[in-house]
Length: 455
Image (cartoon, rainbow, N blue to C red):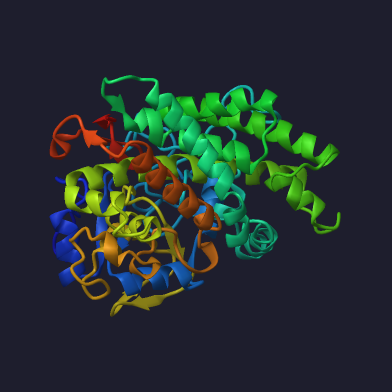
């Protein structure tokens, strides 16, 4: 294409893909883009092509991980970067770089990574780590051999059956949050801070069977993460606190395995097959970061979509559609990604959508665009809870990096939306939902607040 607008493209409506994204999906589904720092990359926009990138091993995250663990990509990441392991054209943004488009303080670790940052400076308080070092997010960016081993291990406990076994506990966690909302009285409440961000951290406590003495640390981390975006320094401090909680939990579970996820991993494996203590710490951190904000913003976006479509809200409220179907359509229509998820690098020359990508090319996928691809979904721009089905979206990824926590996330969202509407059947927005202000960090966009009247 002759022109190459800066990516991510300007988005005027929160749940409507940018015009430029729609145009490219129709006219040039695999095309070059320019990032704010001047680097170039490739963007994939159609559902089938996006699935190919997610499942074809020639599109690798290993180079992304190498840059993150090395301390991030070189300099401002402009074209022609020559640091070892950097993709063709340089990395899309260096740590603390001043290239336009980077969040305040620079990119968290310099590498946009799937499901969370590729790495971030560690603040004080993280055992064994000091300022300027990098987090190892383990499985999310692991090399294929390590990723496969780690995934097989986690898959023994993160199963759909395990998620269903937690449904009662998840429901109780939701009810505790709703009890707090009920105490607010007749005044409007903010469903973003008072509900969407409250439920996931309570569920994480249940998932890890977190001891009471460690729960304040997790709550503190959660509050820091929400307040920190998009500052890298504040994010690093928050992650340092989380690593501290994770290490204490792992040490406790290694000494006496409990009933939580980490205890089950330890108890269910022979010592030779057991992940190392550091890998277990990284597992806690990865699952916490992937399971906290991503679920919170999906709650927030889903509630806003329901408020903007009162006919669909009524169908969910009166049981015309199931909570399971509603959640799948919310996951498709009201996605929270900013466009920097799913970054990969080609390991060899690849032809995709009729376009030849060179070895070492940086490739972005648009899950938003894939979810609105009329070649895959009928009436893709219509919010219709009745058609909700997992096949309509790739929100949880596909292939080797398919989200292992997807079953638990679904249970959480189903229980959350269902119990909220049963507890407060007269729930209505306190202001025009079309005028809600959005905010964003590197990976998510969501309503800054969402005021509602409960009764």
